[in-house]
Length: 293
Image 1: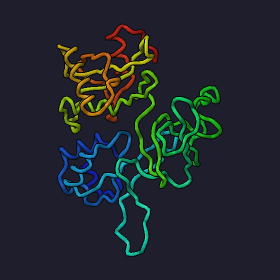
Image 2: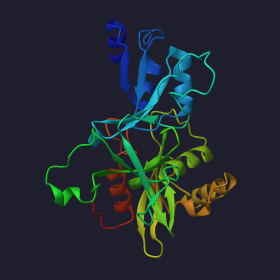
Image 3: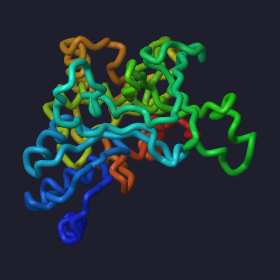
Image 4: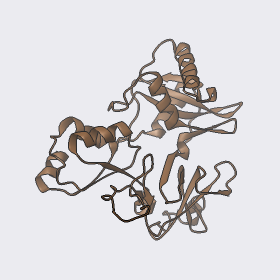
């Protein structure tokens, strides 16, 4: 229906998510997006193969962006590069591969170490803080609630990433999607991608098969648990396969899930995002761990 409306009204700007792009790919005709000038994609990571396949079918380049509700809600966006200029010298690009685009004018950024909290160069991956006219003044409830996310007017985004000299932002994941194991930050999204590669799973599959969550560990503080709809028996063998597969990809054995938890389905939000809270609840319940939101 969305595709039919875009075509019927000659829409020129579409803002959507990768989950919806997959639906468009399966159900829409090739001329659906012929009037679209800008296709902005956010809310979740845009897989490169999905962007390529979408461009090949519809002739439109998906431009990945990044934002927060607390930032009204856009922080950065990629734009299609203009036609090559005959002018001498370099030009500032509108799009950069593997980034969520350049920060909007008027926004300031700083990066702090997730370990020490100290400010580090913006090219160093760490916690992203933003300041600018689009940042909201605070949550309902006042200073008691705001004190953890506002420091001297800077908003703590909860996202881990870095920026380059042109202000192009690279997001590595939410801090809630990292586990701190033995002092090392283990990124859940990168681990999920590695496991999908080991198990030959298709990133374009609409049904999610795996999810990584953090669980408490008495020795290392935190550990990784893997929820999956694919494993019902031989869990130990599956864990061994993952461990060797991670090492083959040049990743630390430390990333190997401590627990593999068979589930009937992976909880998802209507937006297509992973329902992290429900995933954690499933893991805690399976392991008989008291759950605290």
